[in-house]
Image (cartoon, rainbow, N blue to C red; front, side, top):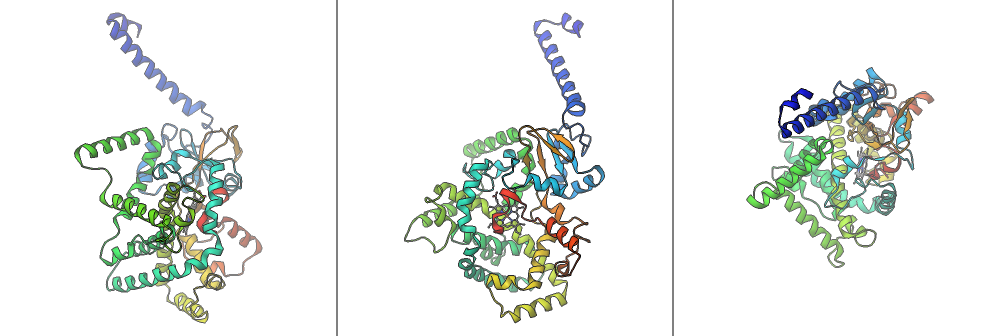
Length: 448
Ligand code: HEM
């Protein structure tokens, strides 16, 4: 090497030296990540995992299969698997309970949750600071309180009646049940959040899915690029923004602009005492408890977790019931006997109905994402191994819902499993593993 730059001019010496230093640094980093990193004692998901998460998992995550593939690796490699240079996946209910315990010091990973922030105003789902999160949860708790359900019942009954008309129209031929259920849930959640429906059922009545909902799906499929390459994706966003301003091409789509205008209009209505809808999340929160802008972000952010989860679950349950005529008949008899009540407490007292819903939530596993948390300063001993502070660790609630020890034949829809008399141990195990809404400070607020 010394001979190389002795024969070059001064500029050549610096270039060669830089090249040498760069190569040296890369080799040092590789040796460190594979042999000396505090995570080098954890089994790797792939040979490339210690270098970059994207390198080995992007195609799988892009297709939404990562959460299905990882349990297979855990079965082979144990409760901890290294999935990136500084990232570990865990599959252990004990660890899950510690990480998601009340007042847990394992906070949400800001790199991931910041991707959900709307217009620079973090909402409950995307707030990562524990104190701020706890305060926002107290404010929101007023609206998600179980005692508020009777106020929402008529609104839900109205939307379900419109959904039934849509089903009648569509059932003349084959139709997509997931899209149809999503229209119902998007209209219910938007009426709850904004006081007015986003118009998904109307749009499907006219023969097409609401564009903004389709676009949200596309956005989530790119999530791993945003979290793993934040700088590049930010630069890409800026370039698209400038290009769209200069040329008029690209930039926010018409439907996303229309949605923004619609949401802003709902905020104006909610804060106008004369025109405000009777019941709306925006009306209760905006101005009094949190700023109007933050209330608007809460409404927009809620549409995602509120719509996709409930609609996927409903579609799965309807599909399973359509394949089991005798279960359908029994359920109809139970509901007839209860005079087709719409009262939540009365509905919950019908054991078969509760079992069908509970099993549907378990079987669907609609919240399939890995929930990333950061190990607190000082590190933590997990499954007998020291994991340094700052490491991102994650696990998915669906692994526990589909665990074959707690739920034999986990991929079968079997509402009976919730009705059968089982041994005390099996019942405790089953209830322990039933965590569709996660646990701890960030457990689903929609489940209250
Ligand atoms: C079957 C239905 C549902 C399932 C399985 C489900 C599941 C979950 C899970 C696992 C989380 C934790 C996410 C995390 O830690 O990152 C969560 C959080 C959340 N969910 Fe749900 N959810 C459902 C329905 C709903 C509904 C109907 C709403 C609203 C109308 C909603 C609003 C939220 C919000 C705002 C959070 C964030 C809570 C926080 O960070 O404190 N969810 N949900």
